[in-house]
Image (cartoon, rainbow, N blue to C red; front, side):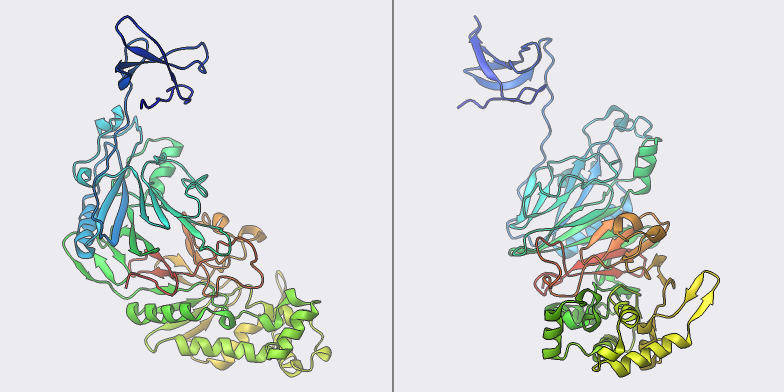
Length: 525
C-alpha cells in the first residue's frame, strides 16, 4: 500500500494524479494555493524521493536510532548542538558515569544557526555533530518505561527562554524529557489517582556557542553543562539532574563525584532542603526515605520549610464548626502540644554531626495570626499558652523606623526549647542564610515588592535560591523549588494536583540536585 506523503507547504496529505507517458505519477496537493503540484519520482507508485518543479531534491530529516539493551536500568541523557565541540572534561565525566553505572548514554542532537560562530560548520548550519557524540546520538521518541518518555524527535531552539512551554500535555499522563541547553523542570497537575507528571529539559554536553544578539547572550548565560540520570524500576522511575562544576572538573550525583578519570566518594553535601514538613501530616514513607538520605549522604545542614503545620491554629478553619469538632475529638486543638511536637521532631531528626535551620514559612506564621485574631477567653484549652505567647510578643513590640515591629512567636518558643543556637537555628523574618552561594532563607510565599511568591518571580532576583511553599518541584533558571513531605492528598488540595515528595541537595560544589521520593523510594535500590 502506498504511503501518502504530506505537502511540504501546507502539511496535508497529497493524492496521486494521472500517469504521465513515462508511466510515472505525480503526487498532487490541491489544497495549496494555486493548486501547485510536487512530484515524487516513482516506480509502480513507490516514492523514492521528493522534488519540486525545478527539480530540487527535498531534504529528508536524519534519524539517529540504535538498538538499546533491553535490560538497561539506567540512562544518562543530554543534548548536543550541531557543529559545536563537546566540553571535553564534562564529556569525560559522562563517560566515567556511563561505565560506573552501566548506563545507556543518549545524546539528543539539536540545531542552532549561529552566524557569529567561531566554527564554520555552525555558520553553514550543517547537520553535523561532534565526532565524540556520534555513537550515542538518538533523536527518536523513546518510552523509557510506562510512565516516562524521551521526546528525542522534538528540537527546540537553544535560545528559547521557556523551552517547556506548550509541552505540558504532549505525552498525556506520562512524564517527559526534552532536549535543551537550558535547565528547566515543571510538575504538571494530574487527576488525584495518578502521580503528578514531570517534564524536564536535559542540559547539554557541547560548549556554549551562541550569536551576539540579545537572544544569543541570554541563551549563553543559561547554557548548562548538564545531563539527566534516569533509573528505571518497573513502572517507577527516578530522575535526577547532574550539573558540571568547572572548579572541581566534575559533577556529583548523590554520594558519588564523577571526574573524567574516575569516580570517587563525594564530599558531604552542604545542605538537604526538605520538602515542606508539616510534622503532623508527614507521610511515614517519606519520613523513612528522608532518614535514609540523611544517613547515607550525611548533609551538614538540614533545612526545614513549613515545619509547623499549624492545624490547631489554622486561620482557614475560623467559622467552620466541623473543623473544630474534629480537632476537639482527637485533641488536635491543643496549640502548645503541636508546637512542641514540631520542635521535638527537629531535635530527633538532626544527627549529632549536623545542624538544623528552620525557614520562616506561612504555616509557622499561623501561630502569630492565631494570637492576633483569637479571643483567649473563648478558648479555655489554649488560654494559658495564648497568654504566655502574647506576653512574649508584647515585651518585644516597638515602633521602629518603618512602623510597628513585633516578633513572630514560633521562633520564640523554638528558642526556649532548643537553646543550642549553633546547632539549631530558627530564622527570623527577612534574615538571610546562604550556603554555597545559594540563598536558603526564602520559603517562596512572598515574592518581590510584596507580591505572592513563585519560582517564576523569584528566579531573577539576582541570587540563586532554593524555595518551598507550593509543594510542586520546579527548576526555573536560578530558582529551585522543593515539593512536600506530606501525603499527596490533604483536605485543601482537591482536584488535579502537581504535588510531589521532592527534596533538594546542595552539594559541596554548590550545585543543586532535586531528589524525588516515589512510593517511598528515592533511588534505584
